[in-house]
Image (tube, rainbow, N blue to C red; front, top):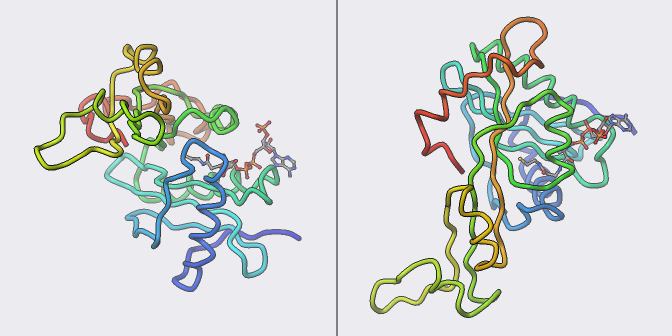
Length: 209
Ligand SMILES: CC(C)(COP(=O)(O)OP(=O)(O)OC[C@H]1O[C@@H](n2cnc3c(N)ncnc32)[C@H](O)[C@@H]1OP(=O)(O)O)[C@@H](O)C(=O)NCCC(=O)NCCS
């Protein structure tokens, strides 16, 4: 069956959540689960196959910067061009809302990285996500944080510099390299990454997810 891209409506929420969680299941974001759809400032796009949401793209727009908050295609519907179609709509919407740069943050799944590169994004701003988890190794939490008296750390999520990646991988079972993908929306050929505004991140490190 074919699919159509349209605006998200409230009735889509259960199907939207199911699509998101199933899409992330086989990726480094497998435990990034939402119980309710967040609102975003830019655009909320869905690809539907009949009544079923098979692809989602949430876009937040802040001045000249448009950020993909979520992009996910149901695993049974990947490699049909749905991700590309959602992106194409998002680029148009971002430009219409005055954005000149489109970006997204993601971890280190090779197929996802290939997809962003193939779509014309350029890569920058690498840093490390560390998940220190008692159930991976009882010593992990104590390697990461010192808890307040009376508290025991079971799991901690931390950011670190890329330079420390190798050491952190020796100390913790779950380490991801997070990175920014960005593309310029200026001009008709928006795929070129040459004039991407990297200052948006360099001046504002807290945008790291
Ligand atoms: C990354 C992701 C959104 C891509 O969505 P998708 O719908 O599979 O993407 P597309 O179909 O547009 O492109 C994927 C591939 O299918 C190919 N393709 C596009 N249309 C096609 C078609 N009609 N028939 C066959 N293949 C097709 C593309 O050329 C591309 O090939 P490549 O991987 O060799 O570059 C999707 O894989 C996904 O949801 N991944 C898990 C969640 C995730 O990691 N999200 C990003 C977190 S930030």
